[in-house]
Amino acid sequence: MIRPILKYGDSGLHAPAVPVKSVTDQIQGLIDDMIKTMYAAPGIGLAAPQVGIGLRVFVVDISVGESPTELITMINPSLEVCNGDGVITEEEGCLSLPGFSAMVERTDEVVVSGIDRDGNSQTIEGKGLLARAFQHEMDHLNGTLFVDRLRGIKRELIVRRIAKLRRNGKW
Ligand code: NI
Image (tube, helix red, strand yellow):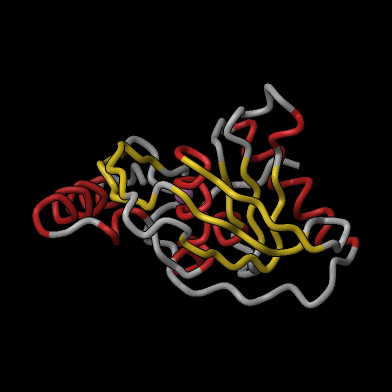
């Protein structure tokens, strides 16, 4: 089932998510729905809070369904930066901020550890776009969106445009 994606401003997106206690059938169903929702959007990643579920789960597929081996499901992930110097600034968007994007600074290389949907531990190293996607989805689990990483006028501009869209019933 494709689930509706919450947009910036919805309280579910701005609170930290809690760990999954066990990978039940309900969690399996959530993961299936998240994958379908991500591909339908289409997007390269989706975190459970974006579909209104405050649990530490995200899915990422930088091939957007083109290459099945690239689909990653992470439950209760933790993220480690592996090269502190490699920072890259690139354009970033988010399914919870349709129509908006901005240049966002991210570490170029990270390692994410967590459990997969079969309950096994997994550790995945990500570089470039995958590293960016991991950091973006980890942010979602902590109640942070890319706009929150912008400063000053750049952030203000997006926040004001969203407020205007909301006033006009378009958000
Ligand atoms: Ni996002």
